[in-house]
Image (cartoon, rainbow, N blue to C red; front, side):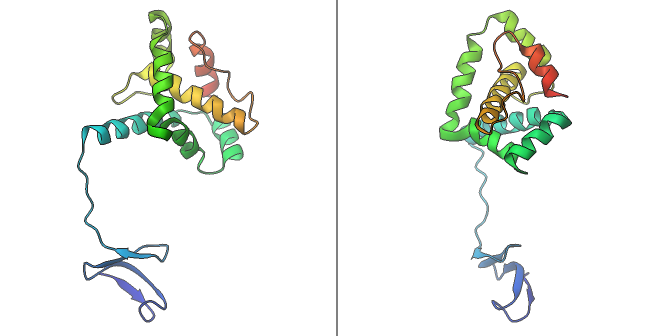
Length: 164
């Protein structure tokens, strides 16, 4: 049921009106649509990638988090997720191909250094992708030096910089 303050459409309202209109907190009115959640294979793959990216970003230390917030604003994590998932996750795919070319020992080092626990995707893979994307974003905001550029052999260095 909608909660109306003042005469309808001249004051404010929130909620649903008669199953036809929905008022949101920002003052917008839209048609009510029953939410769909088909849970297709592709949809779940995207959700799993985004969840793993968020798990990595939650492990950032206070110093790096503050620097990113200063350079990118309050929605700094959305910028990094957008960097990775743009154009059908093209950057994810490119960095995953780079990671696949690492030798087995380097992959193990990245998995060991990874501060987060992945959901579906390999832990070291997600850590490398997020670290490389964070490095690329930092260069664009003149934040050179926030973290070292990730390579196949410097996972321990990145992990040390990640949690500070």
